[in-house]
Amino acid sequence: MGLFLVLLALFQSLPVAVEAWEARQWPDAVSEWIRLSLLPAALWLYLRYFSFLGCRQCGDDTEHSDKPPHG
Image (cartoon, rainbow, N blue to C red; front, top):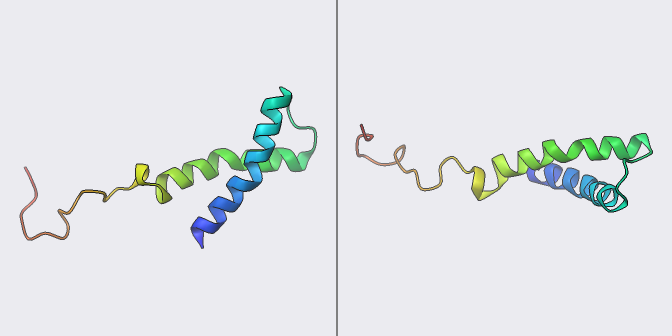
């Protein structure tokens, strides 16, 4: 459910950002500003929690192994 909401925010904000970039002007409507303001938070949430770039446990099996931690 969380991934769905993050992707929904991304798909709502990306067209507004691309349109503003191509027109080289800021959005006029308040609704477009709200949609555009979702972009940084949605990108951060996606990269932090749903992509392999933000995975905390990728390749780290210290919690599940019987060996003592390094150190």
